[in-house]
Amino acid sequence: MKRWLPFLIVNIIVSAATTLLVLTIWNRVNTANSIVIESPPSSAPVSTEQPALGELPPLDTPVIAIANVFAAGDLQNELLVVERVGEGELNLSGWQIIDQDKNAFVFPSIDLVKGQISVYSRPGTNTVNTLFWGSDEPIWTAGEIVRIFDSAGQERAVFEIP
Image 1 (cartoon, rainbow, N blue to C red):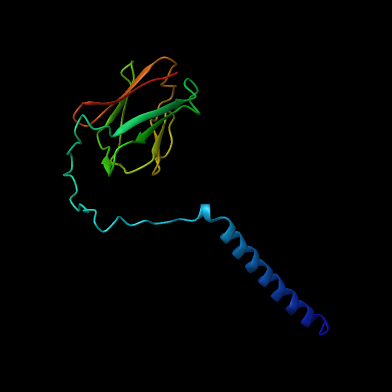
Image 2 (tube, rainbow, N blue to C red):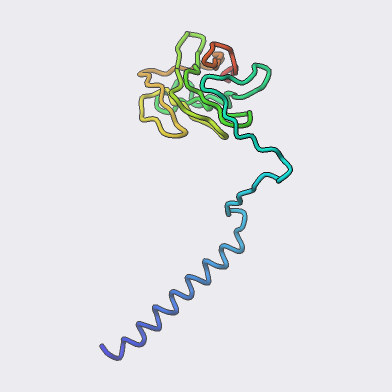
């Protein structure tokens, strides 16, 4: 047993050094996967004002879009993808998705800054970027028109399901 101990220690050291070397090389070669945080130029004014709760962006400014509806007619996989197209934070509290049959989904209090939110037709548990309508049957059909209305009832996005 005493004869194996030096070999075991050398093996541990060589394995650790090899792992560190491989990780270092990997990080240098794959720089595209690293996170880069850019600060705004110092000459750009930075607004610290937040819109008042319930204040809506102007109607002539695009703020949201329906990117697509997937798996229309299949309750388990059916989802609508909502995308933020404007700048800044957009509070969707009270906004609605309404189809031609007057089925309506009311957004909970959620802020959409950038990116997309998926709205599944089926029941489920809401997460940060996935919401669930809670329907027991499919909502969407091909050729149907989907609209998003803001909390004041003004139309903000329209999409025809392919």
